[in-house]
Amino acid sequence: MRNLAIARRYAKALLLIAKEDDQTETYRQELQAVTDLFQQQKELDQAVNNPLYDFDARRKVLSDIVEKLRFSATVSSFLMLLFDKRRFGFLESINDNYQRMADEVKGVARASLVAATELPAETIEKIRTTLSNKTGKDIILEVEQDPGLIGGIVTRIGDLVFDGSIRTQLLNMRETLKRGESV
Image (spheres, rainbow, N blue to C red):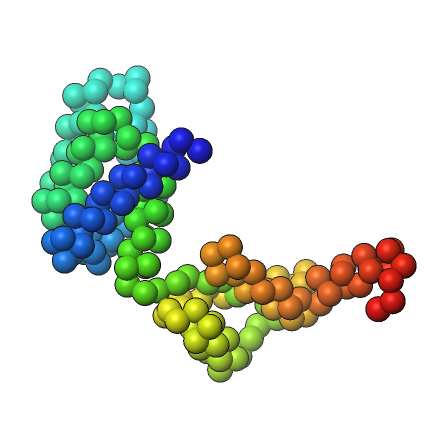
């Protein structure tokens, strides 16, 4: 829980600077790029985050990486600050928080749509438009398939879940029958 608070605090600080600099999207892309790099290159992650290696050597590796990536001065300084404060291990969580906060600033919400079968593009667009109208935000919809739903769809926006799957309806019906209520 404490780690989440730390990550949120650093993400919020970077976002405040980004809004002041009018660089929210630039910082978003740079933070995502460095996070992706460290997720894909586990050896690199070890070279920078493993405390068994010399602190100065690890800092030099990170400094060289940041220099080669040619990030903005703010993001470069931010990454080095994370390392110096021994918070670089929180990079992925900081990035997740920053992405979410930057979406809020931009008026964008991310949602997931899980369907039992492949849905036509026009159906997906209708669902996206409906969600956008309900929330008042632009919706970025991630679509997945799960044959276990039997039929119907499940949509999630943050903590809000719309479950119209046949599996859930059958489970609800079973519970109703167990309680002896009429269907």
